Length: 553
Image (cartoon, rainbow, N blue to C red):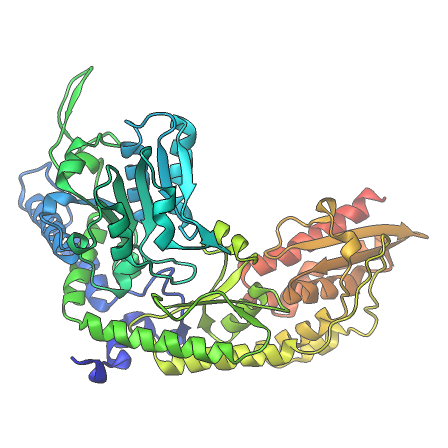
């Protein structure tokens, strides 16, 4: 179908999750983390276990033959999906993370101390940590593409290349910003150099047709669950000559040709890298995912996604008090931003209350987010089934959150001493009387304004462990009564702390011991609406309050 006739609604109907009653109003914008699965993939997994379940290669019976045929057919499909020369160049892994660990362990064995590996600051942790581990083990040197505020300048890659560069491992698309490097420009700078070039294509494979021959890389990795396939399986492409030279990473069954007591002969490609029993059900689902994608107009789908991400960026730039980290140009379907005057986790939780799924945090790209001057961002990511109506619902919810969050916060003190907050006006009855979760959430946001900033207590020894967002709590006892002060960057955490301290502040040990604070939390219906981490934050604050009280007895 052409660009003008592409229908995300029609595409969406292929996905059973959206047809469930509880999900019909769901706005799913967490596709960079994982996409949903079409019925064809789900059915293929179930059908394998229902009709053909057996282990591969090890038996001559018909079920084993069918399973083996399915695996090798999937491998051939994978080679076509990436335009590899042959299926011998395709290794099945549990995902891109395992594939990168395989490459790090196998390629670094032959390196010498002082050899260099080049990375970039936008890499997923899976393309940082394995190389860090190998650098420490083999005394290698890590170098990084020059960057500005964490964003690499790939046109300056040549500045960090030299005669000791052995490996260049770069993302094909940032999972935190959506940034897609110009891989042709990277290839031009690596041409005629004696090194291995790896592309982490986890985000790229979901949004573009991948041609590893056109890219020119030596290795390419991706995870099936990013492009509508099952979890637990991914692809490692490698040039056949390079794979043949590499030692296997893991040992065990399947990857051997002959085993003796003191020496073993490894299997031929690609099986020498596939130790143990393969995830056969997932491979059946992956085979179906390839067939499903072959039936789609990938170019029209990509154009639709690009239109969404362009419009989202335009709309978000019109909103005050938001800092956009992503850019619409060269973007693989992601908008990433941070509220200026609120914790990103608070906004994400507000969106969840509206049945809008986004991701909040550092997105396994912590060095990038920190270099950008943030601790966390809100990330919304689109897919082929995302509609503009989804995006409008997201934008409306962000605007509503801003209206709630816009009222003036109390002014804190930078003095070395601390004072508690006046919580006398807070009434649990008013919170309980709110009819729905959205109204109760608004009430908690109002309660959070009772907690003034307290720079003096933001010390490591006052940090409460277990809160999703950082929170600091202090305590003192006067005339037999307990007094507390709290601070946090999160409005939700402040609201929950205000609820807790409204019950315990200024009370005696006996009075606090008589309270059923966990029961109060449950009775207010907060447990069912707050995320597990937010509930844990309340309980972490409660546990610290009780420790203070018990210590002072």
